[in-house]
Image (cartoon, rainbow, N blue to C red):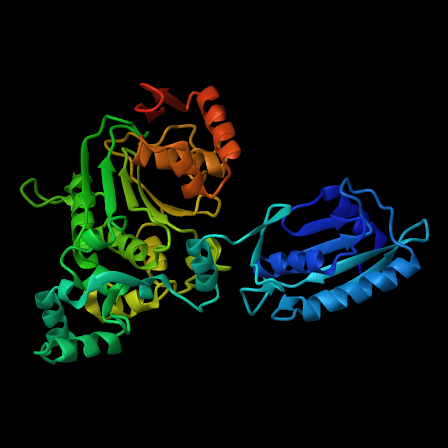
Length: 469
């Protein structure tokens, strides 16, 4: 349908955001190309030319429109790599002037560059450069041109757990471990577990070394059983960090969950083994999902929190690309770590098919909430525990579908989670971890202090943070 004046006025009343940009006029083709690149590398959007920053409608003259359209054509075809197919539409104002509505699609050939080789991304109503290697890798990962599990590591072939790898070769491929280092290296390369220069990649380290945490110390599981229904800074019932190959982390974390669940007799004799309050298979599915589908470009552990009324499994990285909670509930999936997925499907972990894990867990235990925190770069699966002895574990006024810390912004929740994990985290570290500027971090910490959610203990340089319930 054509874009009408009514549509235009509605859009300008909404103001600028990540999908709308206002410009009273454009005269610089390179600047316009940077805007196009930012939209194409994000979710697409519209540039309204002839609209002031405050939403006023000065419009353009007919001569301006001809000039602007030529500028748009040159920028989209010559100043953007790869060229973009954009669309324009002219909307007439009551004054006789015209607003040009420039529509930029979400790119299908990401990442896009401007003529100077700069990659731009939308950040709210503004744009910013991609400056870090990690951010660039994530952009390539989103377009399936790169995957984190194929990242090279500094671990040589000598770090391979040969007994573990030998058993895998025997059980799945029915072949022995090669005798020579040259043959072993060639086999690992053929199996997508080693790089061309003879180093293990991240998938090889995570699955087939004895101590992956010595090579990639951030990719572990941190588990805590808290008393009550809130996080405490120093009070806990049980805590443990789980490291080692993926299969060991899975087994140990599952054991931690099961030992902290209630057991019920469910009509069986008093001497019969009790049944866990929630079936073990629920946590099998969710833990495999967390280990295999987490974002390994995010240098953070998986966190496993057990409360009286719920269990939370918090995975680094929000859902990839256009995947949503609604889509994964229906079985849709997007492979973030294809090497890991391929080997898990060979029996390294309990695995029942791509995209079916969440569905299977929900079928067994419907009381699971899924929360995709894109601002905090987290995915949270919350398993609600049943009432014990006739008492509800959850507070009577709690909304089961509301995410924890609903009164906080996503950034404030992310800050609290980071400070719970490491109370000694500095402002500069928070800037790096959240990818926000220092002023934004300080402003949000001040708000958390005012709200009684955070306090600073000890001297300025050697003190630490305390997150309050």
